[in-house]
Length: 83
Image 1 (cartoon, rainbow, N blue to C red):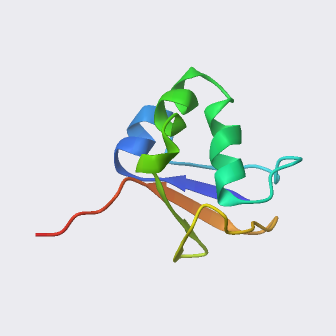
Image 2 (cartoon, one colour):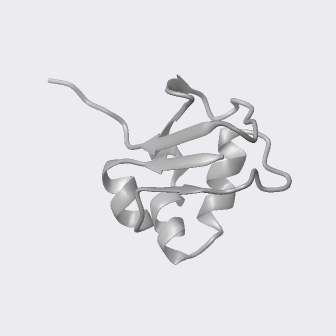
Image 3 (cartoon, one colour):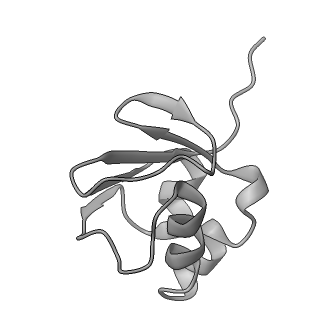
């Protein structure tokens, strides 16, 4: 799966994208966030509070209970505000 990080999520994670196999036991976007937060200190800082992270799977906004597939592209970003 391809992971893409935007805005301050990218800055805190220390990378803009990466490709990983779907981790064992990870079924949903929420599961993936929890798994990412446990990887290392930078990822814990980026994903420690999932309530402030938004996700898109294959370029469509999704909820945290959205089920993932091995070939999905998942983007993570902070909430977007308009003006």
